[in-house]
Figure 1: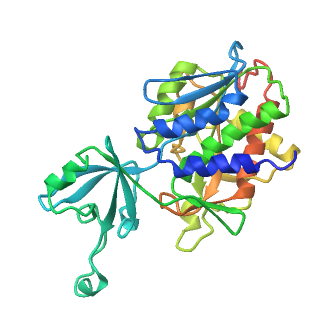
Figure 2 (figure 1 turned 120 degrees about the vertical axis):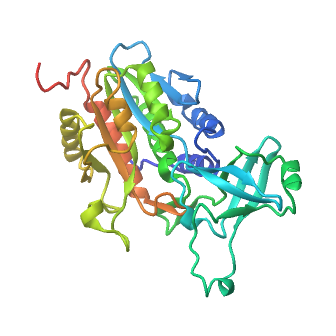
Figure 3 (figure 1 turned 45 degrees about the vertical axis):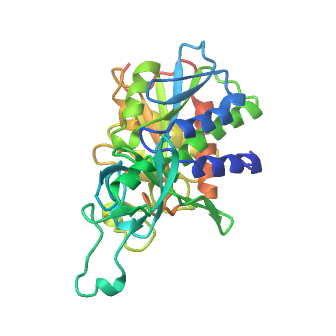
Length: 359
C-alpha cells in the first residue's frame, strides 16, 4: 500500500485536534469528524449523547465495528470565590500536576472565556514546598469579583480545556492535547477513506464508531454497543510508551513508539480474533508489539466485549508518550501502521465468521 496519511488527511487531523471535545460536550468535534467521513460511508446515525456512527453496507446482517473514543479530559467550574478566583473539578482523568501556569478556555454560552491557572512565584514557595493539588490549583480570568466572572458567562458547570494546539515535531512526531483518543477517531476515519479509495468490498456491514464519554467509564461505547449489536468489534485506543525516563517497565510493560501497534492480551480480548489479527500483521509485514491486561483493558474494548451476551472484541493500541498532558506524543509511522493493521484485519474477516472456541 502506498503512503497512508495524505496532506489532506493531515490537515483534517490538525483541525480535529485543535477543536475542543471535552467529555459530555463532544458535539463540535463530532461534527468535524462526521463531515470528514461522509464521502466514504453509505449512511450514518447518532445517539442521544453524541456518539456518531458511519455505516458501510448497512443492509448486511453480519456487523463489524471499528471504534475509537472522541472525548478529551477537561475540568468543570466548581466554585467561584468572592474575589473572582475559580476552583475546579475533574472531568475525566485530568492531571492537576501539569496545571500551574497553563492557559485555558472556559466554554460558556457567550463563547470562550480565556483564563490561566495561577500559581505563586518560586520566591514565595522556598520556605514551603507546596505542590499542586485539587485543593490549591485555581483559575484567574482577570476579574476582581464573583459578579464580574459571572458577567462573562462563567458559572458552575462550565467546562474548561487547555488551549495548547497540535504541532508536528521533527517531521514524524504528532504532539498535542487529546491525542487520547481523537487520534483513534482519525485512524478509523482513514480506514473508511482507504476502503473507499481502494474500492474494497466487505462481505459484512461495517460500523465506524466514534464514541463519547470513554474518559468517565466507557459510557458511550456501552450505549452504542447495545444499539448496534455487533458480531465483532475492533477497538483502537492509545497505550503508554514506556521508553521514557521515570517509567517502570516491570510495572507498565515494554512498549515503545516507533515499534508498531500494540496488541493486548486480556479477558476482554477474544483470543481467536486476536490470533487472526496477529496472523494478518505477520502476513502484511506490519510491525507490532504485545501487552497484557490483568483484568480490564481500561478501554472501550471492555464495553463491547461484555455487551449483548458477549461480542468477540480485540484492541489495537497506539503507543503514546506523556498521556493526559498537553504534549501527548505519537510517531507518525505508528499511526500509519495502526491504520494499515485495522484495514487489513477487516479484509481478513469472512462473511458470518464464527469466532467461538467450542462449536
